[in-house]
Image (cartoon, rainbow, N blue to C red; front, side):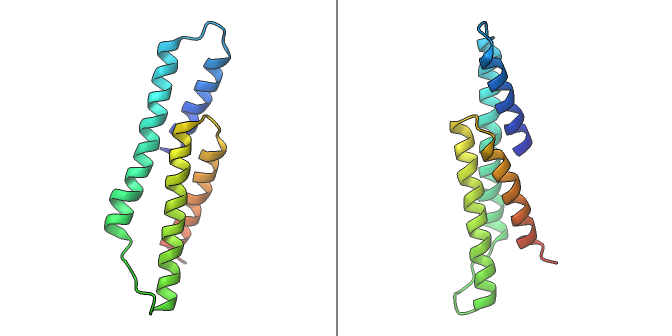
Length: 110
């Protein structure tokens, strides 16, 4: 979904440069970008936050630290997903890709 959002942003930017931009095509790319940005947020909330990341009490320091780190990264992913809907700046998709790697390391520690 992240790469699709980025592809959509690039297409929107490219189409917007043309003085005779195809508005219908532009609208489709905007819709595509928004749908995939929403999918990212839905995976974070519906799968990870509701099903996979179990609450941990602060009395267990080591597990609590990992728990809060995962929540923080997931929140940042959702934030950049939302920002991706508001702009065509690919810095948000690049940040989401980096955060996804960070989350993968937290979720599947070596």
